[in-house]
Length: 391
Image (tube, rainbow, N blue to C red; front, top):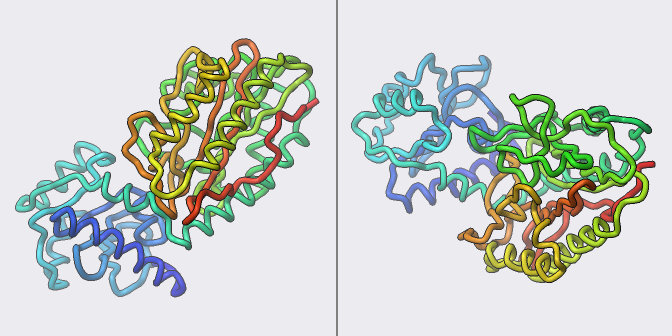
């Protein structure tokens, strides 16, 4: 399932998951979500990872063929799992955790029928909590993604051509990302969350509400995917916010940068400066033990005192957060929101994105990816943070 030098990493992840299984009072956890399969095995496959409270994880695989390891068991259907566990001398669970937040109704009913004697509980918050604190191996993968991401962003002005639409510019940025090694997929938690490689918001489109729980929206090209660029021509007086996802290693980095065409109003530059001030103050404050809600409150207070409360995290429609965890998925914990219960801990990785929308002008602000260290936070995405002219 994974290279020999990855065995120690998988053992560490197994230990973390088994610790929360034991604390929950469950006997086992059965996962099938792609992100959790990747986390527990080092690759995506069709099937299930069975994680007992003690002992080895078992990989029940349907596809692809050819995976080999002593704890890989091929099955045609999940109904075979109980018999296979019995053959391995593993008692069936009395309390079983499932990913209730991501399973479909039919999948849930099917697994409940298979494990009819077990009490079923929701394990999604538990494994998201485990994944919230990254291992050193994961942090290095995110660091690598951030380096490729930053290199790609430094070249973003070079692919602009006068008269481009926001979609045409987005296409060139996506191509640039792929040339830098992007895997081309932004993996997101939540059945109602959708986006392609990221978002390019130009001018008034930055003020268009979206149904998705992102910081900013955009009308998109079609009602079937109402997010990001809408095909409008980028004009003098516009700001252009580039928010292309950074999946170069299977682990995400996240960043946004703002560009301008022609002269933009001073209000937009002032709001951007407030974003940089918010980031700077949070860099001074954030460390293990600090509540995510306190970080949100600090950001909101700075925006309010500067007179930009009405534009903070949106204008027509506002986001209720200023940051989020990143990892295998773009929207992991912790969440930086007013009622968040998350507390910073060493090893957490998050994107901080204080942004403003100026009507008729566009979006301004900053987004960077940080890792929480023993004494504070370290910025992983490194490139110019001021508003840069495209023309």
